[in-house]
Image 1 (cartoon, rainbow, N blue to C red):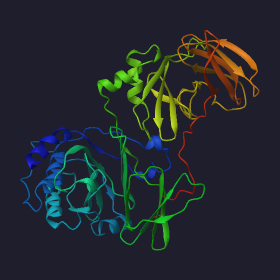
Image 2 (image 1 turned 180 degrees about the vertical axis):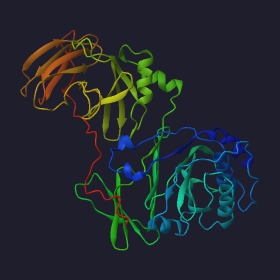
Image 3 (image 1 turned 180 degrees about the horizontal axis):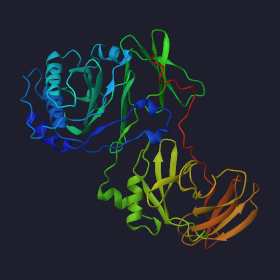
Image 4 (image 1 turned 90 degrees about the vertical axis):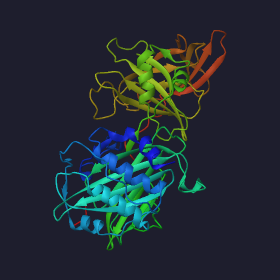
Length: 465
């Protein structure tokens, strides 16, 4: 692929540049609140980054390309932050990454970034430049004696670095650019749901001399393992916690993605959308298609499917319309209920362990969300109403006891029905067809997925004194 082809391939990147806020104000927020999507900010920086990031790949050691012209002479306002001693130590650290030894590449990249217009003058330094997995990531900083701002670029390739016979021969598969303030522990994370085989990566940088250690947050007891790269780490595993120790003191301990995750929403093909709504019940239409596009694909192994759009049968007439989607993950099948309101958000998430079991969920809100409608399933007070989705040929729903005796019976229409239950109880369900044969079984309500990240150890995030 030639340099010109590379530039043409990335012409669409003239918009996705975003500023990001102070990471410390976001540290204790839930993971879902820490995600953000790309928005337009300007084209000059992107053009320079495309030229500088990619042309050294196409022509190793080539002379720097002419700087791209831009008629807008307005400085790029970035929301800079002061330079603390620990930030300065990070800036003064050696360049990290697999491309750190390519001096011609670093010189060209630095020169391109130096020509960009910001709201303050200063030096430019590359902090990280390297390829790993499907990605090339560059982190640079513009700074003077008092302030700084980081420039981040992520480029994705169609093949993993270690699988390319020639590292200089490749095909591109997207990318993004961001402007952020630099923090002593600095992270770049991406979730690209267009690539379910390897959608995630996280890169973490700490000042020189620090030690990054990792642990799986799902383990009952964290088992810390020092990263072999020492003061930086790259991973494609989700759910990791990092601990950064500098000068004998733990300065950071918490989720690997301190700065949140840049999400690349899945661009569904028409064939995928057609397959997603096959068999869906209720008032599907555009609401159903929107629900599929919004479905959470974290840890998914296949695109989302639509199950239902409407209200709970027998429920209040003023109940909001909601959509139910199903996503196969590595741990089972995630069922999500998305409310249709002035703004749309997910109100229930639950897990199925068998794809063919009855889907029984309740429309409710996570604590702290607005508007709040019904208490959380599993609470010990009050009654609730389950939406029940069984096979389309099911006409009857039975609640049975542990011995299989019938406790109650209710009607299903096209396999869909509503069921009143006492919160805190778990019901055993079975669905029957017109001949009286059992066509599906299950329990209700399905186990709800907590709306919080695991916190296996105390979080430490701002002790950089």
